[in-house]
Every structure is written in C-alpha cells, then in structure tokens.
Image 1 (cartoon, rainbow, N blue to C red):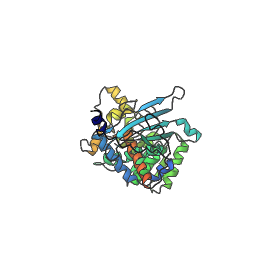
Image 2 (cartoon, helix red, strand yellow; image 1 turned 120 degrees about the horizontal axis):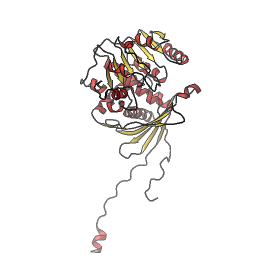
Image 3 (cartoon, rainbow, N blue to C red; image 1 turned 90 degrees about the horizontal axis):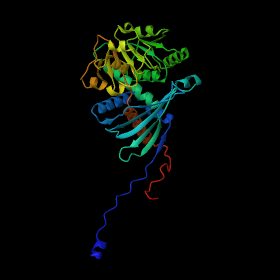
Length: 356
C-alpha cells in the first residue's frame, strides 16, 4: 500500500505567473499620446458612458479628503472598474489647491493607478491632471453634441471661468468640428481672462472674442455657456439671465442656484453621483425633497430614452466618473506601450514568494 501511495501521480503544480511589471508614464508622454485625437477620445468616452449605463462598470462614490487648516483645498479619490475592451481597475487621486494659482502652479495635480483585471496588481502610474482634463473636456463635447440635437446648434459660446479645464473644453469643441461666430470670456481674474484670450487667438479660430465684465452679460450673449470655475456654492442666482434657453455645460457643478435648475431641463452623467456633496443638483433635491427636476442621464439621451426640450434652458451637470479616467488612462498606456516607450521600474515588486 505504501508503494502504491508513493508511486501515485502527484497533482500538477500550477504554472508560475510571470513577474508583474510596473510602469511610470509622465505628463509629457500622456500629452503626446492624447494630442490631436479629440474625435477618438470623444468616441471612447461615449462608449464608456454606454458601458456604464449597461452596468458593465463599478463606480463607487468619490472620497473627499478635506483639511481644517486649508478649507479651500481637497484631495479626492475616485476608485473604479470598467469592463468592455479595457477591462481594467484603478484609482485616480486628484488634489485641488486653489491657492496654487497665486504661486504660479496649476490648481490641480493628479496621478492615476491602473490595476490588472486578473491579478489586481498595479501595473502603471500615470500623471493624470492631463487625463482628468481630457476626459472632462471629451465628456463636455459629447454632451454639447447630443444635447444640441433637435435644436438650433449654438454659434455663440461663453466661458465662465478660464483655467485649464476651459482651455481643454474649447480644444475639444474645436477638434470635434464646432465653429463659433463669437467666444465670450468672463473670469474674476483679469490675468486669467487675458491668458485665455491669448490661447483663443493662437488656436486659429475666426470667432470674435469678447471679455465680459459682468457674468450676466456673458450668459445673455451666449447660446452655449460653459461653467468651469472653482466655486464652492451657487453664485449665479437669477433665472432671467437664461430666458433665451441656452445649452449650459455646468462642468464645475456648484455655480447655479436651485431656482435656475428648477426652470431648466436637467441632465447628468450619473444620478447618484451628482446628487451628493452639495452640488447644485443636490441642493435642488434637498430643497424639493424629490428628483423630479432631473430629465435623465446623457446615456438616456444617447439611447433615445430622453430628449432635451427646445423651450427651456438645458443644463448638463457631470459629476465626473472614475471609469472615464480609467478608459482614457488605459488608452494612454496602450499607446505608449505600442510605441515601445514604456518606462518600466525594475524590481518594483519584491516579495513575490509566499515563504521567502
């Protein structure tokens, strides 16, 4: 019996998995991978919204780290997982420190970690302020397209807030075929408004550029209004400014008073995400006790389940989904890998044997 046991075939040991790799992708590499590809990226974002609408994603609530000694600052964690062709998990870790601007630094800085779908191992860390701006701008351009269908396409755009996000949104609108007769600019900082106007002139468009001293003048002069500020609470309160029924890309989420949203048709990227953290839509829910003011999501519009009206202002308030960062980040990783320019960190993972 002992001999029989000793000669019995031993179960085959599982083949050892290859040692995971880890890459660091710089901001310059990210910019190079994304530059000039606005149409592809808007198509990518549309596909991700459809995947998310179909339930092929995990997108938990964002987590806000705030500071008692720095009340204007925050760092946000956006964990997410997406299926489809990307099949990747990960986390965006993005800070917003408005005081940086006065010191000559950008307000936001970020990294994106990508995790392998099968093993969970992180395989890349990417500079992500560019990725974040890109996915925000691609989402805005996509919404502008879908929400302007069935109504006169806007020819007068106004930018309320003129930082990096405004620049990227203009780049994506221009890169996806939009042209405007006029571009309005308003910012509490004259230097920021001037810098944005300089960018607009260099972008090669023929639109008339106007700096508006008052927010009201900007809104009334625009049939597409882009809010890209760092406002923490509503500061635009008069519905009368919007009686010409513009399309509003409410990217910064906290600019509009509830009265304005209650007089508008409202679309979001994700209902549960938008109705928290004292966003303008969240304030409306708190005021009314219901969500009847919401007309649907952008995915609802793309799928034909909802349509923007023509007799009211149309407001798109996107909270910004981590799945978009993952998809754009994976796009960058694949592009950098394809060109052979991945910068691998040798021996990043060390304890790979269970018992040493």
